Amino acid sequence: MFKVIVIATDGSEAGDRAMSFARDLATEQQSHLLVVHVDELVPGRGGAQHSVVLEPEMKTKISGQVSEFRAEGLDARFEVHQVVVSGPAHAIADAAVAARADLIVLGSVGRGPLKGLLLGSVAHRLLQIAPCPVLVVPKRDR
Image (tube, rainbow, N blue to C red; front, side, top):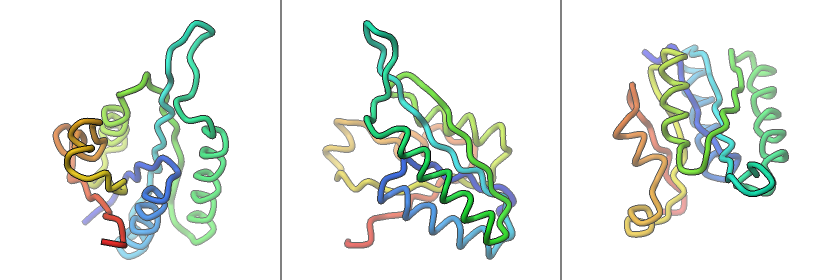
């Protein structure tokens, strides 16, 4: 049913939950995995800077996870998309369109309804603009 699954991850615990869930689903469905990480850039006087200080470490971690998927026999690849702050949902949706994805999987940070509304939510925005179904993996401690 799901030939191509896009996993959107920021390298966080929520992203790790999404990676694990999507890996299991891809194994069961014999799906191709596209792992997408969005590197948000903040423009400034000295040029654009990463919005997350540990960005290089996050990319290394995610790349290692994708290598583990391949070692398990999964068809997986890793893409990094750079955008100006506040555009990750659109970058993920664009990657899903390019990959002809059947499903997007991402983790829920679990900020709660009010903070999610005020701060914005990648998952919420993806539900509005995604070209395919979106599966949000919740926190396990609920």
